[in-house]
Amino acid sequence: MDSVLIHRATWEIDRLKCSERRDLILFDAAGQLDPAEQAELRAHLTTGCAECAGYVAQAAATMGLMGLSVPPQTPRPEARDRLLNRVARKSSDWERFVIPSSIAAVLAVGLTLLVVWKFAKPPPEPTTDTQLMAIISAQDAQIKKLQASIDHMMFASLQGDLQPGAQGRAFIDLKAGKWYFFTSGMKPQDPGKTYELWLIAGDQKIPAGTFDVSTGGTATLLGQVPALPPNAKLQMCITDEPAGGVPAPTGKAQMMGEVD
Amino acid sequence: MLAGSPSPSPDDFELMRRIADGDAGALTKLYEKFSPTVFAIGLRILRDRQEAEDLLIDVFWEMWDRAGRYDPTRGAPLTYILNLSRSRAIDRRRSRAYQERFRNEIENPASKSGEPDPAEESDLAEQRQRVRQALSCLDPVQREAVELAYFEALSHTQIAERLNKPLGTIKTYIRQGLIRLRDGFRTDP
Image (cartoon, rainbow over all chains, first blue to last red; front, side, top):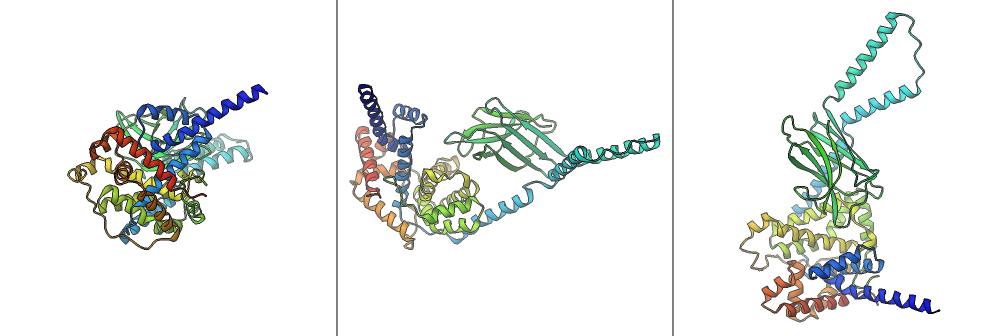
């Protein structure tokens, strides 16, 4: 019985500490905590305390509502048009580049070869040298055709110790000036953070876009190939960065791979 | 519902869900409802119509382009939109381009806002009324200190300098003011 009471008392103290943190969480949301107070609070919040998570949501709501203290103002109708034009442009980009045609062609050829190799009946054994040469010649032609269809494509495979089990793949279509990246198995980004993809050309680190992974750890990105220095060794890298992204990498390299 | 939470409108949640599904019509509806609020926050923080308009487009674009970021378990769409608007406005205000463009005006908080827009959906209008009522309960200096913290993202040290008051006094003003607002915004019984 005593141990139950002691346990309960300890639990109540913990509860009290969290209820005391309620105000601190509100002050933090308003940017009004001293660094020491903030450090203690943030350390506690990283423990995943459910009660404090509720207070965080409450503080966010309180601070958000402050925005309603200013009288509403009607923007120009042109603002709405600008937004909708931007949405329409993005939608048409997606329709065109969800799978760029050249990549689709390469994938289709690869898939077809795979299916043929796996399931097709074996061809009849050549009976003469002439038949054998004809088969080799046809296969050579097919390989050359396949190479020609992908010689403007570059590929990168990204991996990293900080993302065990995750993989990233990038296809860069130099002819179309587009790149396509997808990843799977990545950890969710930390609160207030985002992942940022970089194209590294020699000593240049070019931001290629930020992304958040889905609950399944997947994400896709599309972009334009920037002007690249000639003959530079190309790499792609993902770092974790503050939400919204940064112009130059500051976070740890989560995954990396060479482009070739 | 959490004390201090805005009354969530089921329609807003549905609109956010449809936006995540790529429904541009839902984005338009959400824009019609909240654009005057987002634009007003932009005007208050940025003090320039063009900057506020650019902010407005960026905020709604982000809601469209990164719709997956909104987590309904963490708060109502209104909370998300208001906090996103304030955060992006503060980011814009702190940007080098803004600082250079408005170097002489940042220290002169004269508002450049236009005429208020009286038309508003009733749920939003009611919440706005509740917020104004809660703010009106603060004494004028306390209110000013809280508004400087919110709209200009100033620290208590900066606010103490701006209002020419002792740091300890300002800290107390702001903290008490925030608690009073939280209690004043309470929507549950």
